[in-house]
Image (cartoon, rainbow, N blue to C red; front, side, top):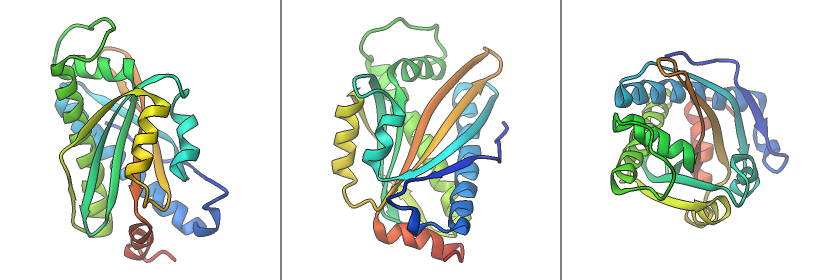
Length: 217
């Protein structure tokens, strides 16, 4: 596993006034730690060596991030979990449907499956992927911030980007802003690369608590 530390942080103009350079550095550090945990967990799930890059961390209201995830009519699969404990909010893993299907194949240790709707085994595998990856990011946050965080059971959605993300926008209506970690996974043994997005959607109080915990104003 390898994480790339020179991630770029992109801040939406609508939240820029809330984020000093120190806050941006803190978000980048949390993203890289979380990516490392997630890559380790994914390696254990698939039995393959993973390299990971986090080229960009975007911070913006969720509606501003949606166009960067996929075209509004593209099919995506997402796994959302509620976040409980010292912080409140949600975590969200979003993948193109073709990527989600291929990841499920690798987790199930089976040959590549052609298109079509996700079967029950694939849905179960992707919920587990969202659960473990989301848990990995929460573990990173817990260690970095010295807080206790607990995830809810994962919930899976499949549909167009606009349909799925609108559903999540309603569920995360109290989020001050979303931290979107663009994540590129490389499976070295099979020479395949996957691109997905992990989103942290803390409510307004939790957003500020993150920075207080690391003594960043």
